Length: 165
Image (tube, rainbow, N blue to C red; front, side, top):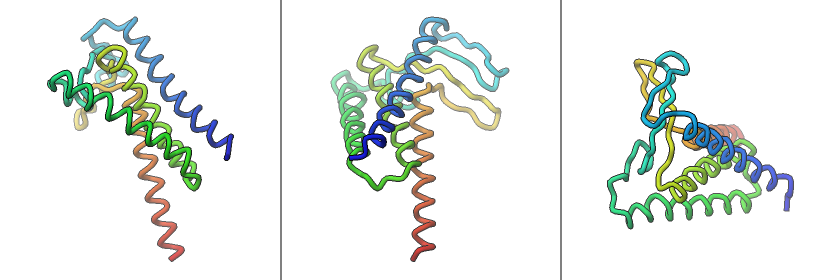
């Protein structure tokens, strides 16, 4: 068992959770709900909204029982499985470990919010004119970054496999 690898995974997951929870704590305490404050002009604004659904509010209109399973139980089970997989799969490269740690940390942070508050605090909005995001949070950013790293690692591995074939 590689203890330093496992400790690295745990620290990366905790770092993602901490960054998200600290930012949400600050937003809840300092930013008026539904207000909008420019950070970088109108390109990046700070807002404080509670999202009772998943990505872009999807699922917010589900009945409470279905919402509980779809937005809390199933994601928690998937995150636990991914975490288990990360500890068991010893051949995983560093980029994938970082990526999966970001996904798990961000996912846990949002599941925690849904469990404790019944919603997820979202607060960042990007509007570049030609590109506009929904309102998101640091956990969403962690999950997205993690998925990009996992995809990048997969593409690098495929390229390496073709060269070695």
